[in-house]
Amino acid sequence: MTLVVQKYGGTSVADLDRIRNVAARIKRHVTAGEKVAVVVSAMAGTTNQLVGWVHGLDAAGYDTAEYDQVVASGEQVTIGLLAIALQTIGVPARSFLGWQAGIRTDAAYSKARIVEIDPRPVLECLDSGKVAVVAGFQGIGPEGRVTTLGRGGSDTSAVALAAAIKAERCDIFTDVDGVYTTDPRIVARARKLERITYEEMLEMASVGAKVLETRSVALAMRHHVRVQVLSSFEDKPGTLVVDEDEVVESQIVSGIAYSRNEARITVLRVKDRPGVAAAIFGPLAEANINVDMIVQSVSRDGVYANQTFTVSKADLPRALAVLEKAKDEIGYESILADSDVVKISVIGVGMRSHAGIAHKMFATLAAKGINIQAISTSEIKVSVLIAEEYTELALRALHTAYGLDKD
Image 1 (cartoon, rainbow, N blue to C red):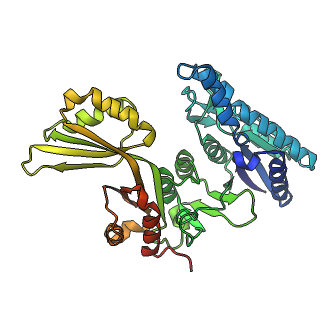
Image 2 (tube, rainbow, N blue to C red):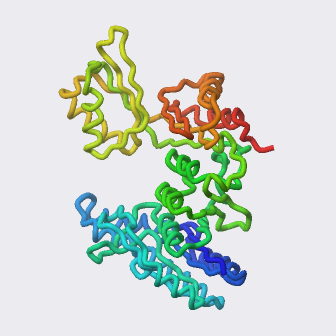
């Protein structure tokens, strides 16, 4: 019998009717001869409410172990309801909290990482002919306390469980029906991809595509778990995320992603001397502020330079405060900040063997009168920072330029 893991997010189990629909879908897979383990999130909005209650009592100094105890409770409700829904339609089922499913994590409460999974409880349940319904987003730490994996952690739970029980694939059911070449809400001619490589999906997730959580894709790539993205609300083919050798003929560019969660900082007129970059970025690193794109421009006399870089919008106020505190050590004249920017990324494994991808991107944007403020690259990605007002124009122009428009 085929062994599969299915994961359903909060919108898929948002109310009793949707839980019944999920149960009916699972029954079809069981009837077709599959052994099914299911990972579910809390019902839509529940985790936000639980977090709000914690913050209502203590907005800053709360015990993170107790925080996890509270926010992990949402999944407990969902797994019980789904198990009952399955039983009422004749499908034997048993629910498992994270610790009951053998999911062990480190002790980093609220952002724990999975250390190992003991597959025996879930496999014994499946071998007895039952559906195993497992709470996502949670596990048990070394001190025997409940831990949570951070937002999006249910995707990670599902992929990790699939790896542990050696499932044929992990089906992620969500509110979209697959991975598209770009956001179809902006580009009407966007195409759904039949297959995409782990590396491409990882790059897309890291630069703004919200289909899959980054940690889950990295885990799938490491353990070679075939992941399928499907719609919870429509019965239609989705997108398979697989090893590169399963993609028969890769396109040079597979997709174009964007992130509005960017802010640009420019540190003006710092002395161009050894150690100045460390003086700027060291304090930011100590404050756990991630820096992405970095551009340095040097004055004609070679004495002064401007440092431009990006941080997340949420980190902008803290970043400015850190730089102000370190002003004497850095020795800058002033700082400019701009949160009205967007990062556009062109992604594809075919870039490894084809030249001119970046040039086409720059030329296409120039033809539309769009100025590039910063650039960063990886082996299969080129990202640029532009003014946010040009987001839609840039996406449509680049989508056409790389031949991604559907017929």
